[in-house]
Length: 133
Image (tube, rainbow, N blue to C red; front, side, top):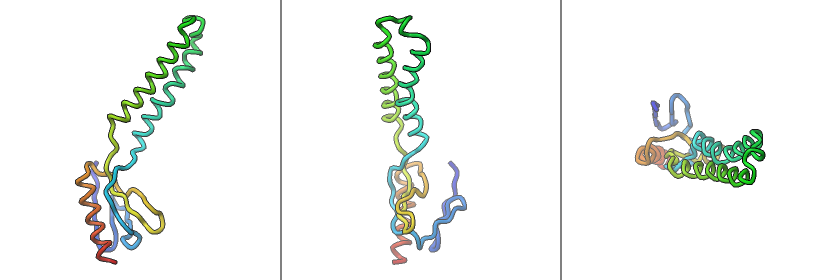
């Protein structure tokens, strides 16, 4: 992920988007939400079991499977839920810089590749904000 981060006394500029330092109250490194991660987990863990049940009914599974229709549908739904849980456990949330601004409250400023990068950028922003106060 290529990005340019420039921190001056007046603004924080990330890929050409300015955030005025006067609006920033605090900055911190934190684990942030990744919406692609959330969408994948929701798709597999919530939509997957529903899809299993709908597909089983549409394929006339109760006639073909008889007494095994319920247990097979249940197992398919549980497997989808467990796969969603496994994805959530394996795919860790990313680190980022979260700033507290006067007008917007807390918002994610940028996503970082690791906690050290997020800490260093947040520390640079905090030092400018503290010097301003």
